[in-house]
Amino acid sequence: MTFSLVARCAETGAFGMIVTSSSICVASRCAWVRAGVGAVATQNLTNPALGTIGLDLLAQGIPAAKVLDALQRIDPQPDYRQLSVIDARGETAVFTGGAALPTVASARGLNCAAAGNLLASNDIPAAMVAAFEASRAPFAERLLDAADAGLAAGGEVRVLRSAGLLCAHAEPWPEIDLRIDCADTPLRALHDLWTVYAPLRDGYVSRAHAPQLTVV
Image: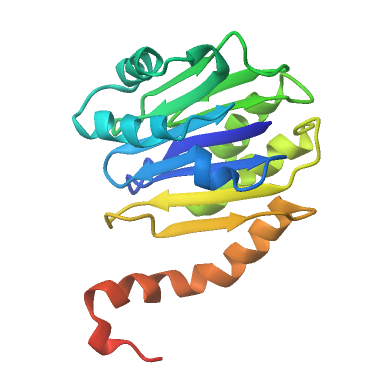
């Protein structure tokens, strides 16, 4: 019911994730990022607890592959999960359980990994990775480019209803946390929301450090 990409920006060290689904509120359940640590996607029949557990393990310096193994051992029903992990070194690992909704596929690239279920084509994750690697846009827009490529390659077999974009870099919270729910064209709406938010981002971050300088 979902396709997503987790990634690291090689230039800045930022981490991010883009996700879209026919299920509503997908980003609140499936997308997890932490500055200086990495990102975790937990999808298919989702167990959101695996996101925070995965980030905590990554924060201990445990490599992506070992974090993925640990999450499968922790979850009592791993066969129903699809997980992607990227660590502070840009290394990735992906797992799809045997009971995941078909069609399932995944792909790994340089500083990124994509995965999806209930897909229209096995080619979708590879298209997302290729788009992310080819894009020369700012990091958040590279993630959006990846999702667009997944949709262009066929997307999900069901109509998409929600999407989310998360990025974390220098702050202990995601500086970008944009979510679209119950929309007819969620990726288009996410692009529009990013266009509005992008010029405001630095100002919102500065309020945490220098509120006395904020002009309302």
